Image (cartoon, rainbow, N blue to C red):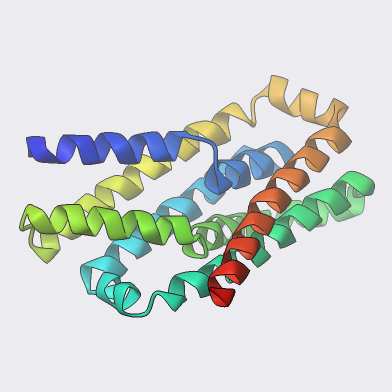
Length: 210
């Protein structure tokens, strides 16, 4: 058990640190509210557990045998983050009217969960992290069931951490600040998503040319 502590601590630091997951949760919590932010966190946690299940049943060996899969993920993930960035920039340019905002909130739950899920599943860094995790766990000779339990714990950790982000970014102070500086905040989210997405696309193109 003690040999897993460095791994658990490393995963915790990775989840706490800023990245696409945190950006997705915070942007949705600010723009759409607490429940949508929590559902985004649930989507992220679900995506984490999906990766754990895939690696339990051998996708790690597949990725090692076909490294071009990671390149494809960089292109898909970069494209998706660019889409989110453009969406935020469009929102910054034109604030939705009351009718559209009400309609958005009615469907925000499903969209929020899907956004969190896709951000994780299209993130090549998530796949590479699980490659490292599975390699580490292989040395401990865990069974498939034990591996899944570790994956479930990591997913629960993700739900707790990103759930806290959702709560923090949906407080009264946060939402009032968002309402006052709506355009600047959305433009900032758009720029950050765009930069991360562009980097993934560039890395993917370089990998193809190499």
